[in-house]
Structures are given as structure tokens and as C-alpha cells.
Image (cartoon, rainbow, N blue to C red; front, side):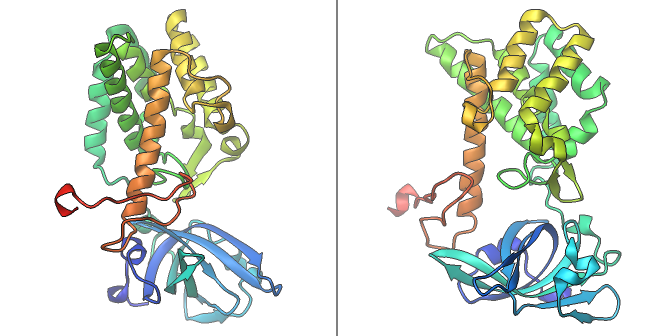
Length: 343
């Protein structure tokens, strides 16, 4: 597969129906299923440095083992190296199709590449915001807190040696910020938005503690450090699957708060923000946000998620199109409006 002929996932997402493409990417998810005729086909989710796409390798797709000399594989489900492709670099030859009005990608040829020549980490997506920018913004937000809160946050992120993991951790596996540095990017955005909400509320007569809000926002997704890991693509751990990041995060917070000797009222206020930040029980929070600070963090968390979904959807749209494909994460289509001057 000649690299000068390759497209990126971003370019592929903007292609029209029937366009053909070649792509080098690392596999995020891979599962074999049966079509209506009982034949095997594969659902593949892949990532490169510019994003992700999901597609199907139907029963007539060609499979190749190109780790050494090209070898065509007749039945990939019986090939040891193709049984589990997650975290491996593959070459894809495909075509843009359409199914029920939604764009679909068909992979007509799948090649397992030489992993030394095409190292998977080369194709892993990272936050579009430079790490040093996010780190500076995080520290600026931490600096807004008074000394008693700042000391605890410093204990959690730096003295407990979580910072390096926190900087790399994804915020999710698929729904939003599912890439290296995604958790830090999301956390900074949530803290900034939550701060703006409580400051606007205070101007309208609704008093809230800005520093508790910011501290709670910086801590709200602490559990994702154990809920997700990089392989080098984001995957969910067993603990993340069956305990979830909210329960994990509260447990980590409680343990570190007790070790640090955090004031009991602050412990209750920050712990409430962590366990309520998903906003409702059906989304995993055991209690509903019951303080202005918790409501602000929950609202900011949801807003950052929805804005990410909007941006991701409209970036995939062809020029001149206003309505996106259905976004399953946000459960809606999005609207890319023309500028006011163009209406």
C-alpha cells in the first residue's frame, strides 16, 4: 500500500457516495457478525491521527497478511493474527456507500500491516489542542482556588503522581474526546464553562462558590484514569465496564481526601459534584445535582459533550449541506447554519 495514495479519516468523512479511498489506521474495535444469509462480515472501527471512521468488511472482502510477503487469507476468523485486530495497524481499501440515508463505509480489502514498519502509535489520534496549552489552562484554573483547596488538588494530581496519566487519558472510548489527551481537554472545558455559569448566576442573584465549582470540575472525571486505558487506542477496562467511572472516581476521591485530611464540608461538597455530574440516575449518577456548584458542573459536562458531538458531525458534512447524519451519541441530527450574511 503506497502511502502517497492514502487519504485521512477526515478526508474520507467528507467524501461523497461512491468515492474510493485507501487508508492506514489502527483498529479501535473489531467484531465478526452474520449477514442475513449466514455469511461472516466484520464491523471495524479505525482511527488515524485525524479522527475515526467505522465501516464493514462484507463476506466478499479480501483479507491480506502483509507482515512479510503478501499472503491472502481466505477465512480471517480462523487466522490467529486477524482474530484480534484491536490496537494493530491495518491498510484499508474501501468505498463510500449509503444505507438508510446515512453515509456508510465499505472496506473491500483489509491488510494486516507489519507493525514495526507501521507502528500503531503513529496512527493514534491526539487532542487538537497542544498539550502545553491544556496544561497551562489547567494550572491557571487550579490557581483560582484558595490555598486550602489548591493544596488538595495539588496532592491529588501531582503528589499522588496522577498527572502524567491524566494528561494522556482519553475521556471516552467512542462518544466524545476519545483520543490521547481527551480527558484533559474535556476537563479544562468543563471547568471553564462551569465557572462561567456560576459567575453569571451570581450576577443574577444566585450565589455559588466559584472555587468549589472549579475544583469539582477538575475532579469530576477522576475515575476515568482507571475506567479507560490506551492500547494504544482507547479501550474500556473491566472496572470501567462494571463499576463505571463515577463510582471509581468517588472511591479514589474519598480515599485521597481522607489521606489528605480534607475538611468534612469540602469533602461532602466535592464528593457530591463527582457522583451527581451525569445529571440523572439513568445516566449513571446515583443522586441528582442538588447544589448550584453541582448543577453548574453537570450542565457544563453535558454542554461540552453535546458541542463535541455537534462539531464532530458538522465536520463530516459535505460542502453546502446543512443537516448532519444522525448522531447516535447525542441522539439527534445537527444543523450547520449558514452565516447571517449568507441567509
